[in-house]
Amino acid sequence: MYCFRSVCEDLFWIGGDDRRLSLFEGVYSVPNGVSYNSYLLLDQKTVLFDTVDISVSSVFFENLEYLLHGRPLDYLVIHHMEPDHSATLSELLLRYPETTLVCNKKSQKLIEQFFHLAPTVVLADENFLLETGSHTFRFLMMPMVHWPEVMMSYDETSRTLFSSDAFGSFGALNGAIFADEVDFDGHYMDEARRYYSNIMGKYGPQVLTAMRKIDDLDLRTICPLHGFVWRTSLEKILSKYRTWGSYTPEETGVMIAYASVYGNTANAATIVSSMLRERGIKTVMFDVSVKPTSDLVSAAFQYSHILFASTTYNAGIFISMEELLRDLVSHNIQNRTVAFVENGSWGPTSGTLMKELLSSCKDMRFVAPAVTIRSSLKEAQLDELVALTDALVASMPSVAKVDDSPPHPTLATKQTNEIDFLATHKFSYGLFLLTAKENEKENGCIINTAMQLTSNPLRISIAVNKQNYTHDMILRTGEFNVSVLTEHTSFDVFQRFGFQSGRTVNKFENATEPCTTNGIRYLKDSSNAVFSGHVIQGVDCGTHTLFIADVTEALVLSSVPSVTYAYYFANIKPKPRKAEEKKKGFVCTICGYVYEGDTLPDDFICPICKHPASDFEAL
Picture (cartoon, rainbow, N blue to C red):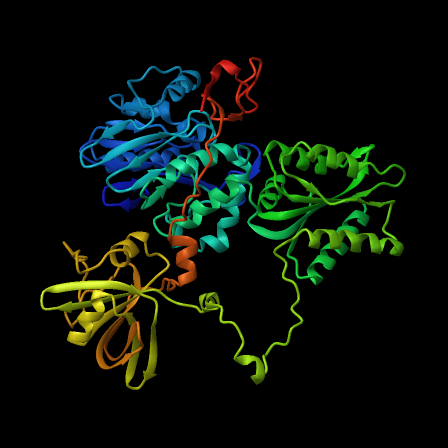
């Protein structure tokens, strides 16, 4: 039986979940399953965006047949040729032989290699446009995110990005398809990080190149090939990719990975963790013989500091620890502070060998010296662990220093105290849409101060800047609505009502928003409540007027949390792009690797795709 979801008016998710798969790509554990996403556009032309893994082919084809309802399938856009997104290509062309494939030259080559097919193909290159009726798609090449043929497409009409594997996550969708339908931070962010670090972690420079292209787009929706569709708080996942792609730690804290045969090395690692916790430092601990390596790679991308504690085994590093270290090196881990504890009953060598492995990584800072244990930790060695802990803490610039000054100034010194207005940023503010109507003129603006004053009678207050046109309308009419904005509010709302003036722009042109009984519009889809107010008093506060009003109507619209000022800046407002220095160098035309320098050696081999210097071109 078909099972699909609507993404927007004419775009549908037609993928499926695989909850029985134990190892994704035969390597990465997926205890919560994985989704394979495919999308169908029903425009004047019908367009399928990628196919799916063979494991969900049955429901995929039922979805496709039901939604096409006898219409031909005009186009199949292939963003990524990895078989978990293309395994059903042959069967698709048997069912819909008239379909034209939209792909790039590298994808075309892979189609020949995987399937021995010669279908009708439209070749896309950078900024190629595909018109489907009311939609126009622009194609962007994104090599090595995470295969060389990867591309994305941007719908200039709906402002939707079809992002291939980028912005995906492990985990089945279980009926939800939007990130805002679940507790993403609580239940899925770790899986998104684990997906990124293990699938794309090696290709940070290529990811940042892709992000520069994406940052130039006006985005409303992101449709990845795994995991949830993003339609709100897009900056949350975009900012994570900038962080992960630059190998910047997300958190100041210590990941402790230990390999212990009889528990003595684990004991030392736990003591260090306890000492760090006593200093207020966050730690996470992993037994490398038990925890899947993919979880440890993910944690290494998350935390600023790493402690490796390993017994010596056959005069080398313990097997599972060595596997982890080689995996981290192959995933290009860098920019971390690292400490070591080694154990060995007659020839402890693991510390030196672990450092040698990680020395090939960029910008690694090693805390010296390593602590050496012979068989088991002795009380006389506690000072060594204290010194190791001290060195880790000292390398954390974000750790707050204790302030020994008196907590409260005396009356005698109050008048000389400085006032730091940045302190006011620590107040917690909400964000609200204030709307008003005067005769036929409708307007609205964003405010950050609204509160309940009394409950009987129910009264609220709002503070409005006198420069806002809405302020003058309320001053004259005495009526307004306050929509309580939610965390799902798109940046479009803030642009529409906060970045332009109602004196020169009709913010409600062609408006479809409903009205309360007072005839004033409110924002239903992005709010969790609306209050209608009748002004009973205005207090002049200099730059602002504080309006006190009786509530004449109040409606609960949803259970989505109210947006705070902090949430808006962290997850909704796009981050400004940093100015970049013009680099001199050469880029690999196969995978996008950048070699920095004035000249490229003739015998240079790309470290990513192993292609020769002849496949490079100047930046």
